[in-house]
Amino acid sequence: MLSVERLEQTLDARPFQYLETTASTNDVAMRWLLDGAPVGSIVTANEQVQGRGRLGRTWYAPPGTALMLSYVLRPAVDDLPYVGMAGAVAVLETIQALGMSGVGLKWPNDVQIDGRKVCGILPEATWQDGTLLGVVLGIGINVRIDFAGTAFAHTAISLEQRVPSLDRAELLAQLAERLDAWTARLSADELFERWRAGLVMLGRPVSIATVTGTITGTAEAVERQGALVVRDAHGVLQRVIAGDIALG
Ligand code: BT5
Image (cartoon, rainbow, N blue to C red; front, side, top):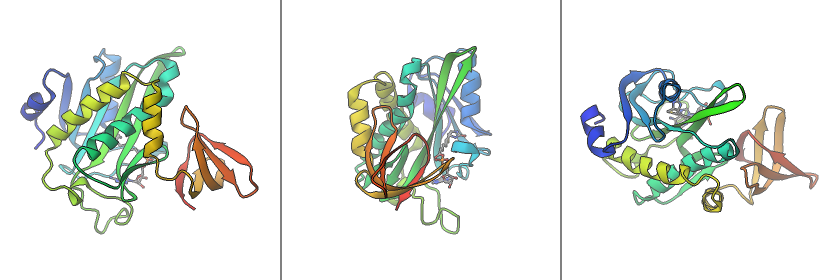
């Protein structure tokens, strides 16, 4: 059960807001960030009715079935490329610590179990007159969503399909500690190395849908700031900054 009382126990002195229902935890966290939320503050909700993915897509999570949170940070501008990596690595490690195998990352920042998406990550930055004011790092983890009969029946998975009876408040506390640790070291080589080591598609044939078209080839490498390097059918290296990757 998520409740203010339970979160006070697991999150200890960390500033947090718990909402029974909200449109998007990222929106609440963004308002709080602009209002002076301390770094490491968390907004979480039992139900999100307008959960967002990237590029205006929607995030599906019936009430009481997921861990949805937004984490407040104020990184240096140069560290922005690493915020999503920190989120992905923190989730990856939190899930691995539950004793699960088959956990990996789909470039750039989806967390998967056996090739199915268990977590999506949405960092959103806010600027004023060219100055970065901060970032909210939105994270949605499927805990006990029953995907049968949904559009995601074959592409998504919930943690409780592998480990029964998880306590979301406890899970949140464990994830928050890892977020603290990695967001404090955004430019560390170790973060990049862990992220790269988690990626499941390097060396494999892939196709990537980007805003300018689809690129197919072999996922050869990732650059330090996260771009994917793909060798296309003509042997030419293509650099991809954003897109949706699938095995080719
Ligand atoms: C993401 O976008 O994966 C980022 C999702 C971030 C959600 C969190 S929840 C807390 C915070 N507040 C918010 O409003 N958002 C964040 P993207 O890579 O665009 O993936 C979205 C796509 O994943 C959708 O278009 C669906 O195809 C699929 N999808 C939707 N819900 C899913 C789920 N629960 N599990 C697996 N796949 C899902």
